[in-house]
Amino acid sequence: MDNLLEKFIGLSSLDNYNTSVAASIELSLERLLESRVSEFDQDQLIENTLKMGSILLEVGKRAQRNRFSKHNSICWALPHDLTIKVFAMLDTQSLCSAAATCWMFNKCAMNPLCYADIDLTTIVPRVNNAVVATMIQRAGKRLRSLKLGVLPSPTTFSGHSRPIVYGINSSADAVYSRNSKRSCQGKDSFVLSRSCLTSLSLDGGTSGALLKKLHLYNIDKMDNTALRVALSVCKALTDFEIVGLVTELKQTLESVSTNCPNLERLFFKSYKTGRDDSLKSTTCVDFVNGCPRLTSLALRGFFLQDYKIRILVKGFRKLKFVDLSTSYSITGTFLRNLSGTSGHQLEVLIFRDCMHLKEVEVGRLLTAVLSGDFKFLKHLDISNKEGLASVHDWYDRCYSPSIPVKRVMEERPGLCLIADFPPEGSFMDTEQMSESEVNSDANLDLEITGATSDSSLSIFSSESSYNSDQGNYIYASSDEVDFLSA
View 1 (cartoon, rainbow, N blue to C red):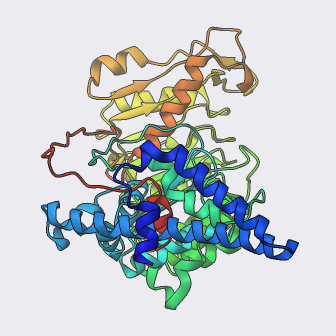
View 2: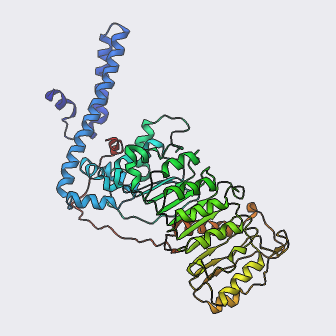
View 3: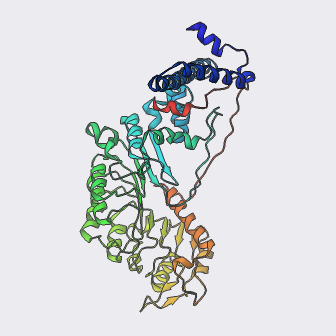
């Protein structure tokens, strides 16, 4: 066998003889086929030739991986435990690319600590339930953060510096290429469904027991039942964000108040703007009692009455951040006399594009601010692309409201007050929004989504450089993406 391989691959520079070698092998195969009498023998010979080619290819890949692993283990400067800590700082896609580099990196990348923060969000569907289950199982009881689904709008993520990995064409494509090869080619190959969170409940809920952050975006058929089952094992959850899920506000808040006593931040954007009128007063009371640590609350696009919002704002004693953008029925009456209760804690109030928000109530709020109330208020957004509602009829719009905006900005320079209204008579619908308004809404999504429980409105990204000794490269073959299956 050694002599046979030497004949085939022992040439010092096979590339120079590629054409002639291929021609010689082809002629030899044709002569062998002619020597076979039956069709069956000829077919068997061709099939064996193809199998032998596959065997040689796989053996060559395995030998290359072994050599690269030995090389990397020698030139890699960090010890095993420190490498794991470094890998734990990578985003999920970069971690999978590192795992596909060589056996040594794969061993480090399989440590549960590396999967404490799983982010499988994408711009287009590229992840299915099997990928999520694999990641959660790898994390085990180390899981602390889980983000899944298709993002509602293009998002700019913070940059991550990383070493150059040779042979992988695209780190983004590398993450899921193995899954795409193994999955069916049907339309649901890359679709997350309602059962994508089932792994959190396995083994007595080990993976979900210490989960702190759960963000879900536009997951197909994720309903109230599936969400309730998942939350039942997430007792330590502090940050919960859901966008575009087919779940009702009432049932979601009931699940949260029952299962998540440590919740500090809730961001919930309705999948059917203005049509979810399921919230009840008793649900608000239970929510306040069940999640006493809440500091950030965003309910966007729901049909909400002022007296229900007042229960929430007055009930949550630690509440600092309130976002009710694009919500219907809110007039602003709940803002009256808040300074003596939880109002003194509020730092951020956002009422962008609330159709029924009244000019008189906004005026009362700004007057209270000028009189010394809401001392900790840092950010107030009362902008509306269709103007504020008048006192008697919300159809009667105020495009130049007589509210003391300028005076507030002068006397409270530390308060960021946003009050953008269209010119009088330019009543617009959503489809007629200008490009600047669309960008403004996108920026608002990023701003609110990125805000943490301390009500910070800024998203900071850091850039760093990677310097390495040019003599110590980390090698990976071009087909190492398939190695992820290990």
